[in-house]
View 1 (cartoon, chains in turn orange, cyan):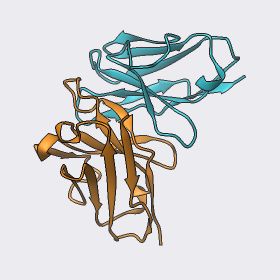
View 2 (cartoon, chains in turn green, cyan; view 1 turned 180 degrees about the horizontal axis):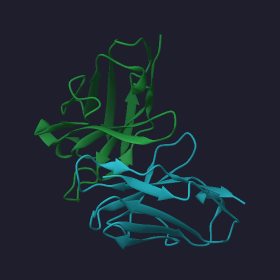
View 3 (tube, helix red, strand yellow; view 1 turned 90 degrees about the vertical axis):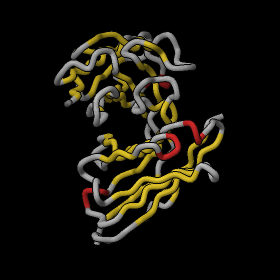
View 4 (cartoon, rainbow over the protein chains, first blue to last red; view 1 turned 180 degrees about the vertical axis):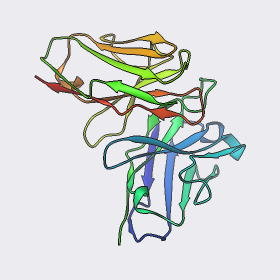
Length: 122
Length: 106
C-alpha cells in the first residue's frame, strides 16, 4: 500500500524558514518523480515544485522560485521542501504527491499525503 | 493555462446524477484529470486522460471531453460522493487546477 506522510509544518514568522518532509513507502520511491502541491485557505490547489527520479530535474512555480528548494534522499525514501523567506501568502496545507508512474507527464498524481499545515504570520 | 470549473456549487439529491464542467483557456488535448476531496482528506484521483477511471474508482464516475471542454458525470449519487471535485491539466507547465465544484446534498 502506498503511503505518503508529510511533517514539518508549523507557525512561522514572515521571513522565516521551514523544512517539510514527506516519508514514502509502498512503492519504488527512487524511480518516481514527486511533487509538492499546496492548498490555500480558500481551498485553491497550487502546484509548488517537482523533482524527478534521481533528482534529474527540479522545477518550481514562479511564486516560490528562488525561495523554496526541493530535494530527495532515496536512501531514506524521503522528499523534502526547504522553504526560506516565507511570506503570508505561503500559508497553506502542503501535500506531497506521487507521479502515477505511467503517464508521460510527471504532473499526474495517483497518491497524495494527508498534508502538513504551514502558517506564516507575525 | 487557466482551468475554470462550473458551477461553484451543485445541489443534488441522492440517487440523482451530477454533471460538472471544466473549461481550459487553451487546448490541453486529453490531459485532464479529476480529483475528489472530502473534508480533512487529501485529493483522490478519479479520472485521467479525460475519460479513464483510476484504479478502484466506481463506474458511476465518468469523464468526457477534449481540447478545452471537459465534463465529469456522477450517476446515481451516493452519500459518499458529496465532496469537492477539482479538474487539473497536467500536460503543460505549470500544472494547473480548477477552482473546484462542491457537490452538496439537496
